[in-house]
Picture (cartoon, rainbow, N blue to C red):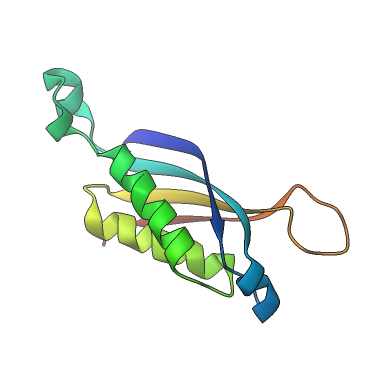
Length: 119
């Protein structure tokens, strides 16, 4: 299966278990790998034969900034199902990172990684 890889999609979102964390928000970064057939695009060199990756990025940021989830697992699930429903992809692999999570220990990020396929 061919893949389109989108790395480092960043946004400020309002997710977290404590209400205060959802109110203030935090910074997130998403990496997405889209499994799809790219043979036609490679042969025709035509935009309509590939995935609109700018559109995928726009949907990721839209979900991440306009919706609120307690868990980044739920955020990841919503993004994955939306991409599968709205774009011609067979599989989505996502890494959703909460950058500098508000915990006592200093850490760069906390992340979940999921893989979903078109049913």
